[in-house]
Length: 123
Image (cartoon, rainbow, N blue to C red; front, side, top):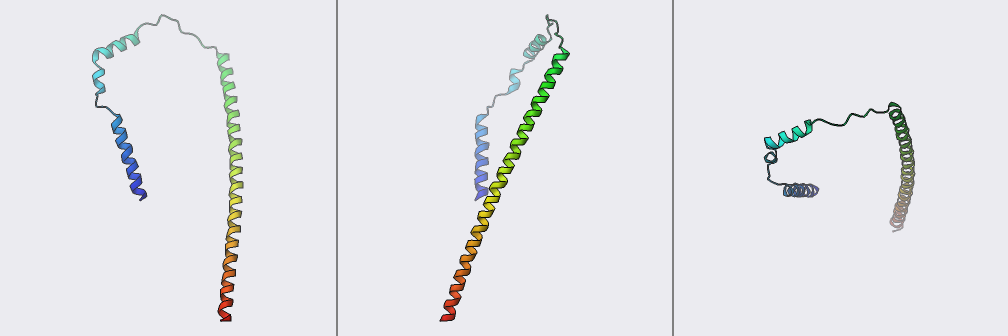
């Protein structure tokens, strides 16, 4: 049953994707004249002079960015460790509840078996 549902979902997704497409050919828009015009515009001379970067500002910005990333990584690590601790506590609580339920169920079964044995002996 699960395989049928997976196949139906995959088929539906494929049909939806096919419905969103079009039959237009993209190469029709890229004529030789259009491409040459775009290339000529890109190769036109630049009238502005290049700007030099300030090395000290760049170094300070990189150092600040590195410290920021490191601090964010430390915060993310602390949050992950806290989440793991929470999950472990929840798992331990669930395991304890499961053990208690199993003991209670086993004790009930033992009591019923003992009562049934007493009835058999007394009959």
